[in-house]
Image 1 (tube, rainbow, N blue to C red):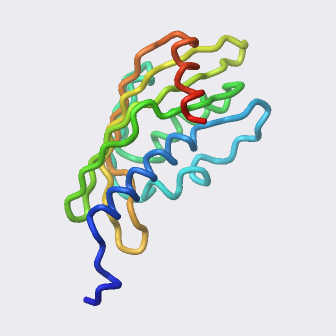
Image 2: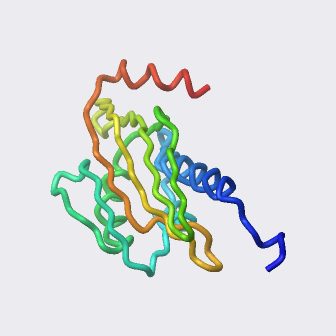
Length: 163
């Protein structure tokens, strides 16, 4: 193996941290924006043919999804109904990389405008496991998101810090 093929662990840490941040910002939706299909938005982050474990307690049924397509079917239609959605990272990703697996944790804020105009805000702690797949790069294989309601004022205090 030549030195061009060697990766420093710090490179992997930075790459996975950037991916986790990009992933949550993929959930942003501007008012009146035409929503693209879930797979088109998130194809970079998941292997749609591989088994996964995905959990988000924003789901009222508290389901664990074992396939990305099932997760998309549960969340994307409701998300499409939102007037808008904005996300900000409150605590940047912490990343541990060991070989072809990476574990991450970050805290993000979501501000969601409901179809009736009601605006709700949440603080979410998100933990993910990423697997490096030959020819595909890093992909999410496990996701756990725990959500707490916060005030819109609390949420908006995080957004100015994002620039």
